[in-house]
Image 1 (cartoon, each protein chain N blue to C red):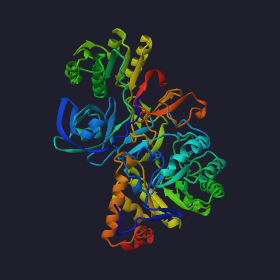
Image 2 (cartoon, rainbow over the protein chains, first blue to last red):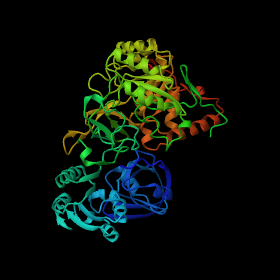
Image 3 (cartoon, one colour):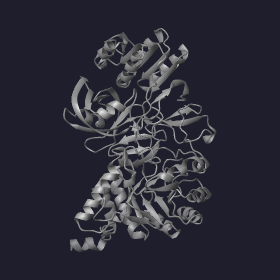
Length: 274
Length: 320
């Protein structure tokens, strides 16, 4: 994946707009020109809690354009609930952009972007970059129910071909998004972000197609910036993303634990040993 | 910029620190990770992640669970092993603008002495912290720190290998921390880090499984602060060597509690996961606090809450 951005920093931003896209799904628009400029597809920020209590929260950067950077997230606990209470004019400090994002290759003509649930937040910039490069982008977007399919028109307007699935059939096809992917014609490359079972299924389908896949992984973070080794995933040693720490011969094993926050969060599916 | 008023300089044995703030082992990487977000010129020292004689993959995931007022971790001493560390890692620390303290973990007395000798020999390393209290490695990790005799043996063995300051990190998971503290002091420790994490566990009630891959882990954060403050208070009265107070320090008030309890320096860990600017903020606020009170430096507040312990006689007296 692409190298770590040296322009990362602590950004003092101001919330310019808060939209509730669905129950417990919030989109915060931030006035954050430096962050917007530095962010590449698939990167995230650590949002510093305004109360100063509890750890910072890792959130994908959804949009990054001009002065605007936005964060799209689901309310899943106390930390996201606190952030969801922010409104226009409120201050929010964020650390970022962080991680190595999607490698939006310039020479692919036909890609599948797969998003499950809140995973949609990580793939807009990726889809936009691929469309700009002239690729055909099919978005396979799955959620539990119709209400949780958020902002899909945005992707359609940008030029994506949409395939929507819901667990209950209330929107699009009934079933898992990976079922739709498996039935589709073979893309050249797959990009995916979503829950772990979905990503494992994407990896399996990619292998059956004989194509490579870039997966954006999620794990509970400690620091979120590479300092604590709390968010690791087993990776084959020969991967270019394998950390130099520990070394290739560590423990006589053929895997190393890479940090999702620093070496990732995006990894090549065929290099994971999970 | 701290230029006038109170001095924030402090000493741990021979180790002179421009600021009384250490970044706790395992919480701050090598400093490189935090450098874009924190001013490393405004911290006293970084305590590196513990290194062992041989490489360790560490524990299975999940390794982190957030809990009320804290965090459980069970990393399991993932590290590249001493040889690689000396060859490829240590030289990177030469250009850090703060002191670098190496952390040594082991599974035998000999391990500690071997790793300590070779790590302490490096010019980049200003002092050594002996991690005799890691709660996250199967059976052996915390054994040393929970036994005064084994602690003394580790410290004595390490002491014989180096003249650099030795800081011994104590476990709170003991019946009497003072006994272990005295054993470390007698064996030649120059300072004590009080405390390491408190053992804990969280269970997922949907899957009926432990939430950490290692089952148990170490609890850090404000949840353990009162435990740590009392430990520092007690240890300060049991030993004469300086104490690095740590456990849930997030702001000036927290830091002051530790100094008043008897700490000569403080260590900041989990708070860096809230906001990487917290250590710099604490230093600035500490300077303002001391200056406002016309105090010359840290020494003026260290251990000032020491009023001894209430005895049964005192209780009887008030009842009478």
